[in-house]
Image 1 (cartoon, rainbow, N blue to C red):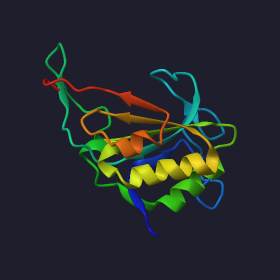
Image 2: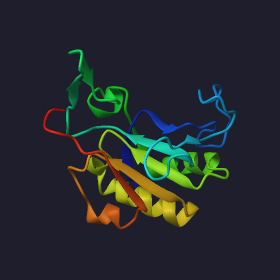
Image 3: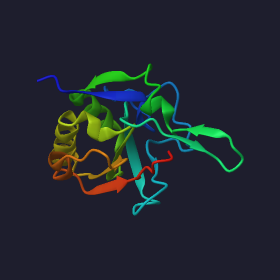
Image 4: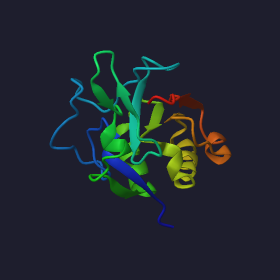
Length: 165
């Protein structure tokens, strides 16, 4: 069965090995010679993590700063400028994760808005849990919820959007 997800241009990050386990020509721009980074926000701030960034969002957030400047979404390449996104088979995503987890036990699925890709997202989470036993956080804007996805993950990190965004 060919179940696919649409990943943003950065896809799975930061990684050092591809889906076949081969070392990448360029290592992550994290200052560390190994896969993973540190979760920077929420309940698990400070925990070593791998990220999967899905493409597409149901919102088009733009903020006006105090000085009047316009600021688009903090990840426009994953939300509404998704021309460099890629459709990737879940099997390949799992292979990349497997070759890059090492001692990492936390995977963060972000976006865009990940819940837009349910039921493929649910299947990914089920397979991540059964194959690797990782803690899964899904970062969402909170406008779309799926009981199926929620039943397969450990933590939902909701970043609510106000009417002026």
